[in-house]
Length: 330
Length: 216
Picture 1 (cartoon, rainbow over the protein chains, first blue to last red):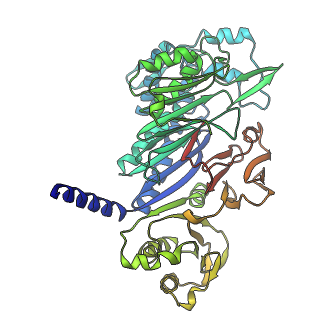
Picture 2 (picture 1 turned 60 degrees about the vertical axis):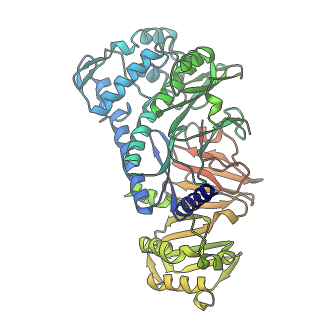
Picture 3 (picture 1 turned 180 degrees about the vertical axis):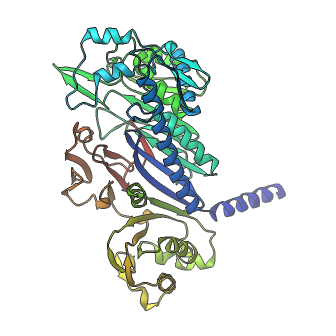
């Protein structure tokens, strides 16, 4: 009886102290990394939350200025512009390049950071993109390969006709760096969403795990499903982001590094992982590997899950995916 | 500076205010069942402090929506208190909340002419009826539209249509028109984005399915 009373009073005190806490949820969005980046921060101090968002925005801008192949002053632009020469880079660019090589090795080059020259030929950002000739693609694909990147201390060198492009991992990498800033500032709960590459920690405004909808690329008013996560990342790769139709054939931006052609194995791949860079890169890799090979790879990795919609619309799940509060549809 | 203004314009704060059930809070619980408070001031930082210190006992166990909008013109600033869809003149000081609002207004020296003020809107999300679309343009700031009224509008080269509680982009001046492809949206936190024109459209308010974010 006394034990029950003791337990009840403890719960009451806890509930009371918890309920006295005033939390603010701040939302902010900014166009960064070639997409809309969304920040949600839940914290007990309005000013600290506001400053932390500003710092997170600055961090993503800083990373973008280092790794974007389209910014003249970026380190990646300079590496690509100086083939055959070692270019001194920051610790962040070096870290991203080394991690990309590790992931390329893990995925047997389904994820490749050296596809820059091939993507440049496809030019999906052009007003009227056109499929490059097979001869050009064949020649460029021969130059692709993470093992050809050379490292010397804090410098990186690429071969002639090879270009780095971190499009398959850069957003995730930048999100992870921004999350580190928020955590360092003591933020209790936050979510950063860079065009579908999401990391969240703590709890949402309802005191529950963050509820993430996985969009159905073919039916805009319906979802493929929902996951509920905390201190976890989720990223999705789909063939609907940048694409065009030429002579009745659909071409999209996720290329098979071995052929230089768009991978036709999947429609959508969603990956859950402990870091956003891993989720981002694996989503791209599985898109190229295909549903069965991709799920097989994910099953060998700890705390990593995947959900794949293959080219025929069939759904594939890794064993633990549904443990993340997955509910299908609506 | 431009980015800073955009940042300021697009901050949306939801304050989850929970208090212990003190007698003071209980007395006013029924009186603040459905409200919207707007403060137009050139001193938003002081306004936020006053809201937290003077007004928060009036909002027990609520989820409050805090929104900030930067206004570039010179206008007369004041407080506007709407309760149960009726405008309440706080200057009458008949109720405790009116007295508290009067105190806030005095400290902010309102009403008076305000240069480039910030509009702070605080409302009771739990009791909001219907849902809304927040349209944010990097050059034109943020505008809020109700989804229960059908109409068409244009912001920064993006033409959008609200129909049957859904919103979609009809046309955009951008190169690839990717923003027109997703079709209509109607779920909380769903977004339509036109990256070249720096326009985002987001659903918020009370709708059937509520998500914190979407991956696509």
